[in-house]
Length: 220
Image (cartoon, rainbow, N blue to C red; front, side):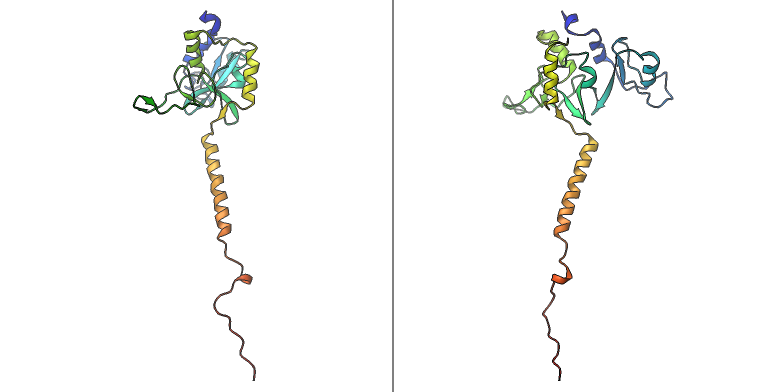
Protein backbone atom coordinates (compact mmCIF):
# COMPACT_ATOMS: atom_id res chain seq x y z
CA UNK A 1 0.00 0.00 0.00
CA UNK A 2 2.89 2.37 0.77
CA UNK A 3 4.27 1.85 -2.72
CA UNK A 4 0.98 3.01 -4.20
CA UNK A 5 0.73 6.15 -2.03
CA UNK A 6 4.39 7.21 -1.91
CA UNK A 7 6.32 7.63 -5.15
CA UNK A 8 9.45 5.43 -5.35
CA UNK A 9 11.71 8.44 -5.87
CA UNK A 10 10.26 10.56 -3.06
CA UNK A 11 11.96 8.96 -0.06
CA UNK A 12 15.21 8.91 -2.01
CA UNK A 13 14.81 12.65 -2.61
CA UNK A 14 14.14 13.33 1.07
CA UNK A 15 17.22 11.40 2.20
CA UNK A 16 19.59 12.96 -0.35
CA UNK A 17 22.26 15.42 0.77
CA UNK A 18 22.36 18.54 -1.39
CA UNK A 19 24.75 21.47 -1.89
CA UNK A 20 27.99 19.54 -1.75
CA UNK A 21 30.55 20.37 -4.46
CA UNK A 22 30.43 18.24 -7.59
CA UNK A 23 33.58 16.10 -7.80
CA UNK A 24 33.30 15.84 -11.58
CA UNK A 25 33.24 19.61 -12.05
CA UNK A 26 35.21 20.62 -8.98
CA UNK A 27 36.89 23.62 -10.63
CA UNK A 28 33.81 24.97 -12.40
CA UNK A 29 31.57 27.75 -11.10
CA UNK A 30 28.01 26.86 -10.09
CA UNK A 31 29.14 23.35 -9.20
CA UNK A 32 26.86 22.83 -6.19
CA UNK A 33 24.91 19.58 -6.29
CA UNK A 34 21.42 21.02 -5.98
CA UNK A 35 19.50 19.00 -8.57
CA UNK A 36 17.70 15.66 -8.47
CA UNK A 37 16.52 13.46 -11.33
CA UNK A 38 13.13 11.81 -10.92
CA UNK A 39 13.94 9.30 -13.66
CA UNK A 40 17.34 8.13 -12.43
CA UNK A 41 16.46 8.40 -8.69
CA UNK A 42 20.15 8.60 -7.86
CA UNK A 43 22.34 11.12 -6.06
CA UNK A 44 22.31 14.92 -6.32
CA UNK A 45 24.20 16.54 -9.19
CA UNK A 46 25.16 19.97 -10.49
CA UNK A 47 24.17 22.20 -13.40
CA UNK A 48 26.83 20.73 -15.70
CA UNK A 49 25.85 17.14 -14.93
CA UNK A 50 22.28 17.98 -15.89
CA UNK A 51 23.39 19.22 -19.31
CA UNK A 52 25.56 16.16 -19.87
CA UNK A 53 23.55 13.22 -18.51
CA UNK A 54 20.02 14.37 -17.63
CA UNK A 55 19.15 16.61 -20.54
CA UNK A 56 15.79 14.97 -21.36
CA UNK A 57 14.93 13.78 -17.85
CA UNK A 58 12.54 15.12 -15.22
CA UNK A 59 14.80 17.20 -13.01
CA UNK A 60 13.93 19.40 -10.05
CA UNK A 61 16.18 21.98 -8.43
CA UNK A 62 16.55 22.20 -4.66
CA UNK A 63 17.03 25.57 -3.03
CA UNK A 64 17.87 26.73 0.47
CA UNK A 65 16.03 28.83 3.04
CA UNK A 66 17.64 29.37 6.44
CA UNK A 67 19.96 26.39 5.79
CA UNK A 68 17.04 24.05 5.03
CA UNK A 69 16.19 22.45 1.70
CA UNK A 70 13.13 23.70 -0.16
CA UNK A 71 11.62 23.07 -3.57
CA UNK A 72 9.50 25.40 -5.65
CA UNK A 73 5.83 24.51 -5.84
CA UNK A 74 5.88 25.20 -9.59
CA UNK A 75 8.43 22.39 -10.07
CA UNK A 76 6.95 19.74 -7.79
CA UNK A 77 3.18 20.16 -8.13
CA UNK A 78 3.11 18.60 -11.60
CA UNK A 79 4.54 15.29 -10.36
CA UNK A 80 3.33 15.18 -6.76
CA UNK A 81 0.14 15.92 -4.84
CA UNK A 82 1.32 18.44 -2.24
CA UNK A 83 -2.08 19.03 -0.68
CA UNK A 84 -1.96 19.42 3.08
CA UNK A 85 1.63 20.71 3.16
CA UNK A 86 2.28 24.27 4.35
CA UNK A 87 3.68 26.51 1.63
CA UNK A 88 5.58 29.79 1.90
CA UNK A 89 6.62 32.58 -0.46
CA UNK A 90 10.34 33.32 -0.38
CA UNK A 91 11.88 35.81 -2.80
CA UNK A 92 8.63 35.93 -4.82
CA UNK A 93 8.54 32.14 -5.33
CA UNK A 94 6.18 29.76 -3.54
CA UNK A 95 8.09 26.89 -1.94
CA UNK A 96 7.70 24.07 0.56
CA UNK A 97 10.23 22.37 2.83
CA UNK A 98 11.48 18.89 2.11
CA UNK A 99 11.93 17.70 5.68
CA UNK A 100 11.04 18.51 9.24
CA UNK A 101 13.05 21.38 10.73
CA UNK A 102 14.45 21.56 14.26
CA UNK A 103 12.41 23.78 16.54
CA UNK A 104 12.48 25.16 20.04
CA UNK A 105 10.32 23.29 22.49
CA UNK A 106 7.36 25.38 23.74
CA UNK A 107 7.33 26.28 27.40
CA UNK A 108 5.06 24.23 29.64
CA UNK A 109 3.54 25.86 32.71
CA UNK A 110 1.71 23.59 35.17
CA UNK A 111 1.18 20.99 32.50
CA UNK A 112 -0.26 23.50 30.03
CA UNK A 113 1.52 24.11 26.75
CA UNK A 114 1.88 27.90 26.64
CA UNK A 115 2.91 27.80 22.98
CA UNK A 116 -0.51 26.68 21.76
CA UNK A 117 -3.66 28.72 21.36
CA UNK A 118 -7.15 27.88 20.25
CA UNK A 119 -6.68 29.37 16.78
CA UNK A 120 -3.22 27.87 16.08
CA UNK A 121 -2.42 25.24 13.47
CA UNK A 122 0.16 22.50 14.04
CA UNK A 123 1.85 19.81 11.99
CA UNK A 124 0.23 16.46 12.76
CA UNK A 125 3.62 14.73 12.93
CA UNK A 126 6.15 17.09 14.56
CA UNK A 127 3.75 19.65 16.11
CA UNK A 128 5.48 22.59 14.41
CA UNK A 129 3.35 25.73 14.46
CA UNK A 130 1.91 26.34 10.98
CA UNK A 131 0.81 29.66 9.52
CA UNK A 132 -2.34 28.33 7.88
CA UNK A 133 -4.76 25.43 8.15
CA UNK A 134 -2.48 22.76 6.67
CA UNK A 135 -1.77 19.30 8.07
CA UNK A 136 1.99 19.00 7.57
CA UNK A 137 5.03 21.26 7.72
CA UNK A 138 7.00 19.41 5.03
CA UNK A 139 6.96 16.62 2.49
CA UNK A 140 8.81 14.40 4.95
CA UNK A 141 6.10 14.76 7.59
CA UNK A 142 3.45 13.97 4.98
CA UNK A 143 5.29 10.73 4.14
CA UNK A 144 5.17 9.77 7.81
CA UNK A 145 1.49 10.69 7.91
CA UNK A 146 0.76 8.43 4.94
CA UNK A 147 2.54 5.49 6.52
CA UNK A 148 0.91 6.11 9.86
CA UNK A 149 -2.68 6.82 8.87
CA UNK A 150 -3.06 6.10 5.18
CA UNK A 151 -5.68 8.83 4.86
CA UNK A 152 -3.57 11.11 2.63
CA UNK A 153 -1.77 10.49 -0.62
CA UNK A 154 0.85 11.84 -3.00
CA UNK A 155 -0.76 10.64 -6.23
CA UNK A 156 -2.18 13.44 -8.37
CA UNK A 157 -5.96 13.67 -8.32
CA UNK A 158 -8.82 16.12 -8.73
CA UNK A 159 -7.93 17.59 -5.35
CA UNK A 160 -4.73 18.94 -6.84
CA UNK A 161 -6.52 21.72 -8.73
CA UNK A 162 -8.37 22.74 -5.59
CA UNK A 163 -5.15 22.92 -3.60
CA UNK A 164 -3.39 24.96 -6.28
CA UNK A 165 -6.33 27.35 -6.29
CA UNK A 166 -6.00 27.80 -2.53
CA UNK A 167 -2.33 28.62 -2.84
CA UNK A 168 -2.88 31.09 -5.67
CA UNK A 169 -5.41 32.91 -3.51
CA UNK A 170 -2.74 33.55 -0.91
CA UNK A 171 -3.21 30.79 1.65
CA UNK A 172 0.56 30.36 1.75
CA UNK A 173 2.42 32.98 3.79
CA UNK A 174 5.52 34.96 2.97
CA UNK A 175 8.85 34.59 4.74
CA UNK A 176 10.80 37.77 4.03
CA UNK A 177 14.41 37.20 3.03
CA UNK A 178 17.24 38.93 4.85
CA UNK A 179 17.71 41.32 1.93
CA UNK A 180 14.01 42.20 1.85
CA UNK A 181 14.02 42.72 5.62
CA UNK A 182 17.00 45.05 5.36
CA UNK A 183 15.32 47.00 2.55
CA UNK A 184 12.18 47.30 4.65
CA UNK A 185 14.10 48.61 7.64
CA UNK A 186 16.02 51.03 5.43
CA UNK A 187 12.80 52.30 3.88
CA UNK A 188 11.20 52.85 7.28
CA UNK A 189 14.33 54.68 8.47
CA UNK A 190 14.29 56.98 5.45
CA UNK A 191 10.60 57.71 5.87
CA UNK A 192 10.99 58.53 9.56
CA UNK A 193 14.11 60.60 8.90
CA UNK A 194 12.42 62.63 6.16
CA UNK A 195 9.37 63.20 8.34
CA UNK A 196 11.32 64.37 11.39
CA UNK A 197 13.74 66.36 9.25
CA UNK A 198 10.89 68.28 7.58
CA UNK A 199 9.32 69.07 10.96
CA UNK A 200 12.63 70.31 12.38
CA UNK A 201 13.39 72.70 9.49
CA UNK A 202 13.62 76.32 10.75
CA UNK A 203 11.17 78.90 9.49
CA UNK A 204 12.24 81.18 6.64
CA UNK A 205 13.83 84.57 7.38
CA UNK A 206 10.80 86.38 5.99
CA UNK A 207 8.60 84.98 8.74
CA UNK A 208 11.11 85.02 11.61
CA UNK A 209 11.48 87.93 14.01
CA UNK A 210 14.31 88.16 16.50
CA UNK A 211 14.52 90.55 19.46
CA UNK A 212 12.63 93.82 20.01
CA UNK A 213 12.04 95.97 16.90
CA UNK A 214 13.61 99.48 16.92
CA UNK A 215 12.38 102.54 15.03
CA UNK A 216 14.72 104.60 12.90
CA UNK A 217 15.81 107.88 14.57
CA UNK A 218 13.70 110.90 13.66
CA UNK A 219 15.17 113.51 11.42
CA UNK A 220 15.86 117.16 12.55
